[in-house]
Amino acid sequence: MPDDTAKPQILIAGAGLGGLTAALALQARGFRVRVLEQAAQLRELGAGIQLSANANRVLYRLGLGEALERVASPAAGKRIRLWNTGQTWPLFDLGGQSIERYGYPYLTIYRADLHRVLAEAVLARDPQAIELNARVEAVAQDPDGVTATLADGSTRQADILVGADGVHSRVRAALHGQDQARFSGALAWRGVIPAEKLPPHLREPYAVNWVGPGAHVIHYPLRRGELVNFVGILERDDWQVESWTQQGTIAECAGDFAGWHDDVQTLIHALDTPFKWALMLREPLAQWTQGRITLLGDACHPTLPMLASGAAMAIEDGYVLARCLAELPGAAERALVRYQELRTERTARVVRGSAENAKRFHNPELAHAAGAAAYVEREWSEERVRERYEWLFTYDADAAQVA
Image 1 (cartoon, rainbow, N blue to C red):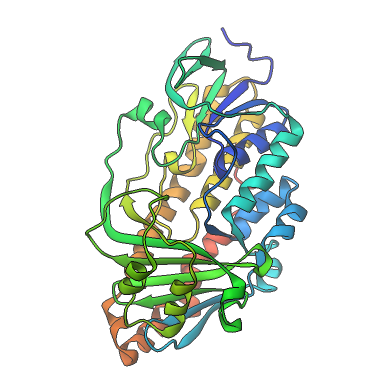
Image 2 (tube, one colour):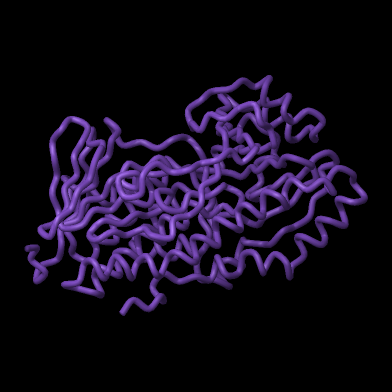
């Protein structure tokens, strides 16, 4: 039988943002952690993410504030722009407001930079905490603990296993079978642009959301203004490959946004390499935990990128998981159930809200300037914006009652 008088040893499948946050939060509470990562080296894909106050509240409390500020770009605010005229509406200010209102900044950051900050912090606590070339293929559990079988046939044992292995999670598949993904009807383009290739007004410290009928574009600075992140999402049903590494062409991307404002075309033509992937829909799992095995992040609540909160939810998951295990000592299985109870409703709301934003960003009323102005002023009024974002930003992962 497992020794419940000692802190349990924990395996985490996947060294992504959620898995590394969980590892660091667990280490900070004295747990022994081993992260099993399938890649041969620690690296993240080149893409930007937005870190709102709720995510930064976790990261700063884990001691990462100074490291983040060295590589992130503080957002002055968010703006909505109309696809063809470029008309601009302020969505909300974030320069000082995020800190004043929520206690923490709103940052835009290169995913690889955040990943490096987390990995370095985990390895600083334990240089052996991350095992590379360790793809988890199967999992099993019994009263004595859990066993992960790797691709090379070797096994790793621990008291608890956390599946943080992403949207194609092997751990989730082992617990629940293959997921039932369905095509959303939308294709996403992404890329990162050296800021020096862009005119000054496209390098300003704002997260800008261009909205139009059937499509939208988002861009914002990364790495303290050295880079600009580009994401373009449109309704298109002839590409259903769900891969972040599939390259497209500038010509194809520009063609998908033909007729859009010159600023959008300038962004597209400044891309070094555009990547494209199909956006797939998956229902969030209601049951994350079985015995001594649980899930976090995209493994249990994959979400479309329209609420800019997928990474934030994984970060919150990792922190709350660590709290539950620390605050319910000697009751590992109950701690995992409590973690699930604290996180399912919030993360499911993000999944639903992201899907709703897709419809909002692509509404047919945006086709013509006159109707678009009325639509934007209604849908992005201060009252409506607060309804959609206040509950997200005010969340405190330390305030959730565990015991």
